[in-house]
Image (cartoon, rainbow over all chains, first blue to last red; front, side, top):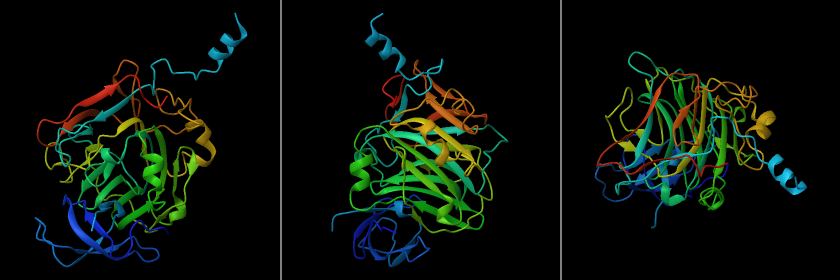
Amino acid sequence: MTHPFNVNDPVWLNDMSGRVNVPAIIIAQPITDSNLWTIEFDGDNEYGLTGQHTVEFTTDLTARDA
Amino acid sequence: MPLGFGRSILSKPIVAAAGAGTGYFQSEYDGDTSEGAYNLIGDRGSGNTWSTDDSYSVMFWFKGTTADIANGAWTVMRMYAASEQSHTVTMNSNGLEPIIQGASGVSVVNYFPGGTTFADTYLDDEWHHCAIEFKSGAISNSEIWLDGDKKTLGGNGVTSGGPSTNSRYFTINGTKTAPGDVNGTGTNFRASSMQIADFWYKSGDNNAINLDSNMSTIYSSGWQDLGTDGTASSTLPTPQIWLYVDSDGDLQNGGTTSATFAEQFGSGTGGNWIQSGTGGPE
């Protein structure tokens, strides 16, 4: 599987719950037979999200500048 | 008649009488790239819902750049019945990802070629064709073809089952953030300003469309006329949705599921909604 992101890549999270442009960092890529990405929220966001979070859809993530 | 003239006539593609496939539809942003573009919503009417399964096939033409996907990702289509219950296709600058959120899990396949390959190849402001056969479970159950080329897929191989419930609404170009019978609730999330043409969808159809056998009918070094019913003269199964803009600039649905399609914006004034009878992938 080719992964579009590497560990420690800065990303934006735009998830299916409607949260938009939440800054995060890739903590772990999906393992075999899983599409679950682990991200950690990076700095403040308007949703009050902190800590680590699991992302199901790769398209929920887009690259951002560090 | 000069020989060259006769050849030029004979080599033109045969266009159906109603002009299927000559045009496209598109929303522009009103300046608000998170909500200010139109969804195109297929409404089955009160008391009716779309019928979905643990598989679906979808085909469409798209034209645009990464700038047209301004909301992080583009939800190409979505039947969003309840939380975590949907048929969804999303695209971003990295690639393409069909999803089924079903009764027993979330099944995902994807085409992410890495680097900037997808954006460089397919988000170059030219028309490109996408065909997807998607069945939850093993990744090998599914196929994604772009411009007639079969792609190597990733994903999770999860068996999801079909959605546990269905919505009366089917959304093309974006999704409402609130699930269910949404028609004005939630915001227009992940709507793009991409140009879209010849949108074909059928649920419960994995392998029936048989992309391996029928690709030359669907795409042959360019656009192929699938006719006003989307079957290419009964070569393909009959789709539930077959949307195209005819030569008069009118949006036509040749699919078998009765629904009214209309554009709807989430907030602000909405951008410009464009239906052009020319300029499509033909």
